[in-house]
Image (cartoon, rainbow, N blue to C red; front, side, top):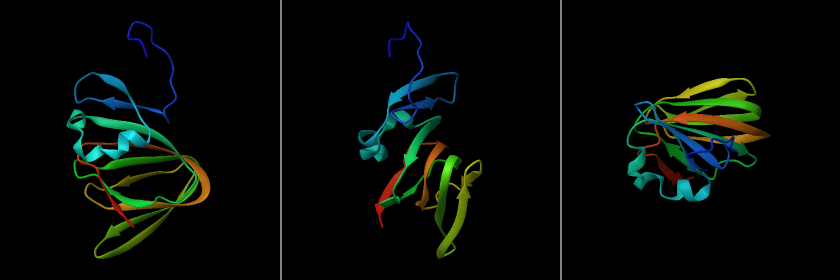
Length: 131
Protein backbone atom coordinates (compact mmCIF):
# COMPACT_ATOMS: atom_id res chain seq x y z
CA UNK A 1 0.00 0.00 0.00
CA UNK A 2 1.65 3.29 -1.09
CA UNK A 3 2.14 5.69 1.79
CA UNK A 4 0.96 8.67 -0.28
CA UNK A 5 -2.34 7.05 -1.21
CA UNK A 6 -4.38 5.76 1.75
CA UNK A 7 -6.73 2.94 0.83
CA UNK A 8 -8.98 0.43 2.52
CA UNK A 9 -7.59 -3.07 2.98
CA UNK A 10 -8.73 -6.54 4.02
CA UNK A 11 -8.02 -7.08 7.74
CA UNK A 12 -7.85 -10.86 7.21
CA UNK A 13 -4.70 -10.54 5.06
CA UNK A 14 -3.27 -7.27 6.40
CA UNK A 15 -3.02 -6.72 10.15
CA UNK A 16 -2.64 -3.42 11.99
CA UNK A 17 0.13 -2.77 14.50
CA UNK A 18 -0.76 0.02 16.95
CA UNK A 19 2.45 1.25 18.53
CA UNK A 20 2.50 2.58 22.08
CA UNK A 21 2.89 6.00 20.44
CA UNK A 22 0.68 7.42 17.69
CA UNK A 23 1.32 5.12 14.72
CA UNK A 24 -1.02 2.58 13.15
CA UNK A 25 0.97 0.50 10.67
CA UNK A 26 -0.48 -2.06 8.25
CA UNK A 27 1.59 -5.24 7.96
CA UNK A 28 1.25 -8.35 5.83
CA UNK A 29 -0.69 -11.03 7.71
CA UNK A 30 -1.47 -14.65 6.99
CA UNK A 31 0.33 -17.88 7.80
CA UNK A 32 3.82 -16.51 7.15
CA UNK A 33 3.23 -13.83 9.80
CA UNK A 34 2.44 -16.46 12.45
CA UNK A 35 5.19 -18.89 11.44
CA UNK A 36 7.86 -16.77 13.19
CA UNK A 37 5.73 -14.76 15.61
CA UNK A 38 7.93 -15.68 18.57
CA UNK A 39 10.98 -14.11 16.87
CA UNK A 40 9.43 -10.83 15.69
CA UNK A 41 11.14 -7.88 17.38
CA UNK A 42 9.00 -5.32 15.52
CA UNK A 43 6.08 -6.20 17.82
CA UNK A 44 7.96 -5.48 21.07
CA UNK A 45 5.60 -2.62 21.84
CA UNK A 46 2.03 -1.81 20.98
CA UNK A 47 -0.89 -4.01 20.06
CA UNK A 48 -1.85 -6.02 17.03
CA UNK A 49 -5.33 -5.99 15.49
CA UNK A 50 -6.25 -9.03 13.40
CA UNK A 51 -9.38 -10.43 11.83
CA UNK A 52 -9.58 -14.13 11.11
CA UNK A 53 -12.10 -16.40 9.45
CA UNK A 54 -12.52 -19.39 11.74
CA UNK A 55 -13.64 -22.43 9.75
CA UNK A 56 -11.80 -25.23 11.56
CA UNK A 57 -10.77 -25.94 15.14
CA UNK A 58 -7.42 -24.41 16.04
CA UNK A 59 -4.67 -27.01 15.47
CA UNK A 60 -2.57 -25.62 18.35
CA UNK A 61 -2.62 -23.79 21.67
CA UNK A 62 -1.50 -20.15 21.81
CA UNK A 63 -0.32 -17.87 24.61
CA UNK A 64 0.49 -14.15 24.82
CA UNK A 65 3.03 -13.41 27.56
CA UNK A 66 3.16 -9.63 27.00
CA UNK A 67 -0.48 -8.75 27.72
CA UNK A 68 -4.14 -9.67 27.76
CA UNK A 69 -5.89 -10.46 24.47
CA UNK A 70 -9.27 -8.96 23.59
CA UNK A 71 -11.41 -11.15 21.32
CA UNK A 72 -14.61 -10.03 19.58
CA UNK A 73 -16.74 -12.54 17.71
CA UNK A 74 -18.34 -10.75 14.75
CA UNK A 75 -20.24 -13.80 13.51
CA UNK A 76 -20.53 -17.55 14.11
CA UNK A 77 -20.03 -19.56 17.26
CA UNK A 78 -16.88 -20.85 18.95
CA UNK A 79 -15.96 -22.55 22.17
CA UNK A 80 -12.86 -21.09 23.82
CA UNK A 81 -10.73 -23.48 25.83
CA UNK A 82 -8.34 -21.99 28.39
CA UNK A 83 -5.76 -23.82 30.50
CA UNK A 84 -6.35 -22.51 34.00
CA UNK A 85 -5.73 -23.78 37.53
CA UNK A 86 -4.37 -27.11 36.29
CA UNK A 87 -7.39 -27.86 34.09
CA UNK A 88 -9.40 -26.66 31.12
CA UNK A 89 -12.06 -23.97 31.30
CA UNK A 90 -14.54 -24.06 28.38
CA UNK A 91 -16.33 -20.85 27.45
CA UNK A 92 -19.18 -20.65 24.90
CA UNK A 93 -18.53 -17.70 22.57
CA UNK A 94 -21.28 -16.33 20.33
CA UNK A 95 -21.59 -13.60 17.70
CA UNK A 96 -21.61 -10.11 19.21
CA UNK A 97 -19.73 -11.17 22.36
CA UNK A 98 -16.29 -10.10 23.55
CA UNK A 99 -13.86 -12.01 25.76
CA UNK A 100 -10.57 -11.14 27.45
CA UNK A 101 -7.95 -13.88 27.55
CA UNK A 102 -5.64 -13.11 30.48
CA UNK A 103 -1.94 -12.60 29.82
CA UNK A 104 0.02 -15.83 29.90
CA UNK A 105 -2.99 -18.18 29.61
CA UNK A 106 -2.78 -20.94 26.99
CA UNK A 107 -5.93 -21.02 24.86
CA UNK A 108 -7.47 -22.44 21.69
CA UNK A 109 -10.87 -22.54 19.98
CA UNK A 110 -13.29 -25.12 18.71
CA UNK A 111 -15.51 -23.98 15.82
CA UNK A 112 -19.21 -24.81 16.23
CA UNK A 113 -20.31 -22.48 13.41
CA UNK A 114 -17.89 -20.78 10.95
CA UNK A 115 -16.97 -17.46 12.49
CA UNK A 116 -15.25 -14.14 12.00
CA UNK A 117 -13.02 -13.29 14.97
CA UNK A 118 -11.30 -9.96 15.68
CA UNK A 119 -8.37 -10.03 18.09
CA UNK A 120 -6.44 -7.22 19.76
CA UNK A 121 -3.28 -8.37 21.49
CA UNK A 122 0.28 -7.54 22.40
CA UNK A 123 1.75 -9.80 19.74
CA UNK A 124 5.31 -9.74 21.02
CA UNK A 125 6.45 -13.09 22.37
CA UNK A 126 3.32 -14.98 21.29
CA UNK A 127 3.89 -18.74 21.55
CA UNK A 128 2.20 -21.71 19.91
CA UNK A 129 2.37 -25.35 20.90
CA UNK A 130 0.77 -28.44 19.36
CA UNK A 131 -2.35 -30.00 20.86
